[in-house]
Every structure is written in structure tokens, then in C-alpha cells.
Length: 146
Image 1 (cartoon, rainbow, N blue to C red):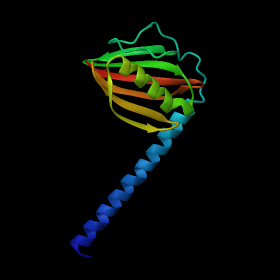
Image 2: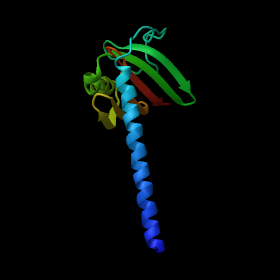
Image 3: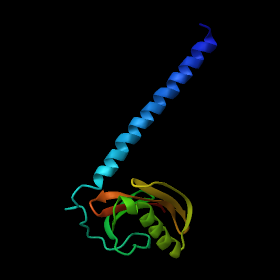
Image 4: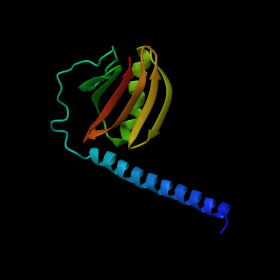
């Protein structure tokens, strides 16, 4: 077998292994996200914070769960009522609230029933992600660069 054939076989094998690994990862990640939607919410919604940092608007019905700061990055988590079927709509509602506060959406992505994300810019840049937290609640993660 010549070098070109061996190289072609090696490339095809690497692509197939990479693709198979991605499929397995996606399957288990999605299974974990779907499972979160069936977990009891007890103890998951307690917080002493009543507002999001950096003047981020808190959507109606939302509750701040926690806020972490890592250098110039602030990561805030909130809960919103909803289930897996509401993920994209709730992400869009959060984005409307952010747009009313002077932010603009620079990109978005969604896997309905699992998670919905968006990139934002304006007073601060960052991302918003909505995914199941527990039965009847969704988690909204705001990751903002200061």
C-alpha cells in the first residue's frame, strides 16, 4: 500500500472516530439536560440576592440563584418558570428584556427542548443560556465580561 493510501485511511479513520465521539458526547449531554427537567426543585431556588449584577434586568417571574465573579467575568444564574418546551421562548423573552435595557443580540443558537443560547453586546458583552434546572423551572445563565 502506498503512502497516499495509508494517509487517506488514517484521515478517514480519524474523522470517523471524532464523529463517533461527538455523537456519544451529544447523546449523554442531552440525556443529562433532559434528566434535569425531571429532578425535584427542593433546595435549588434559595438565594440571598434579589437583583442581577451590572444592572442586568431580571425577567418577570425570575429569581436570582447565585452570582460569581471571576476576574473581569461575572456569571449570574437565575431561575424562571417553565419546562423543556419553553426554553427557546423564555430565552427570547430574556433577550427582549435585555434589549429594552440597551443590549443587542449578536448571535443565537438553540437545541429546542435542551438549551438556547445567545450572544449579547451593549453596556457589556457576554452570553445568555437557558436550560432545564428542575421540574417546572429553567436556569438562565448570564456570563458577562466587564
